[in-house]
Image (cartoon, one colour):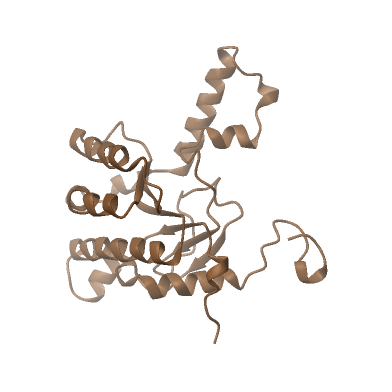
Length: 246
């Protein structure tokens, strides 16, 4: 039986939390109950990440495309976010977790912006798990914003086009200061990125699980990491077993 190697835990794990609605429909429950149980899975997974020694955990909580969902569902999701921050922020802070939010805030309700800002402000000096919440996030918009910022610097004469490189573009992304994820997990059987960390996940390993997000927790995270540890990460080089570069 393959077991977890505690010396090879990925520093950054990113998760596309999928399947709340399917989990609920399979049980004859309203979709909202699936989302509520999904919040419980977030709590379990954050604690599991702390226990396993993961340094960065990013969750895709609300995409920029999720606004297309029925208004009642979007309203329920916003209400869940409000309750999660109000109920859990003090505990996260006490556990030395730092909360960071990536995404666009200019079309959010003022009270939600205030809550997100408070979560970041309160925990900014914490040195434990870095919990990154991708909220109202879309990777294409992120890349456009980065390109626009660089173009403005060029137009202002502060930067030459020839000086722009991958590192410079990375510094203009929402994730500046956060290492790229080594492992991306998606639940519920879907096998696509859905506009999530398109730049950052270029060399990530992917694990797609059949289980829906509300059932996710410590054991499922361990299984995904074991799968990650079984792979030979070559980054375009030869396999280490073949005597090449990793």
